[in-house]
Length: 138
Image 1 (cartoon, rainbow, N blue to C red):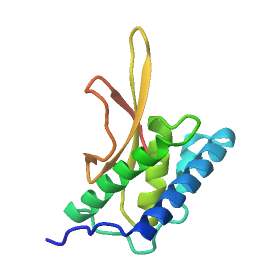
Image 2 (image 1 turned 120 degrees about the vertical axis):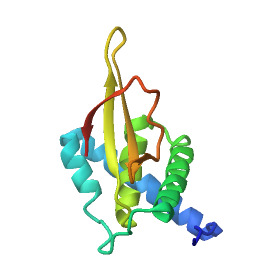
Image 3 (image 1 turned 90 degrees about the vertical axis):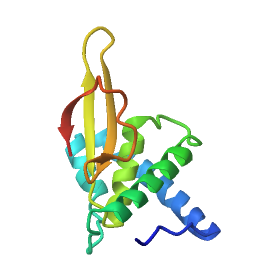
């Protein structure tokens, strides 16, 4: 099976710029539109030739998820689960990798919500513990 090759230094720089641009777009869109519209806008530049779901797409999705999380840790502002998930959704769409953004919640005292991304039914960003019930998949 073909493996995903390591990124060259200039590719890393371009990827970091793409992540920052997607983050800024997601923040801007969230201020003026419901989440469904934000996800649609972030996916609007989807690749015309989607990748077939499978191990290679899943491996690339996980690598991108790791890079997004690491890059956004350096950004000011709210870069928690929803921001990371929105940014990753954009990156995956641009590469033709099908994915779902999942939003879940845990009730009871201290209500808590969480967002993550799944590719081919597998989590790419941490789904949290098993106490989060799925509310919506986008």
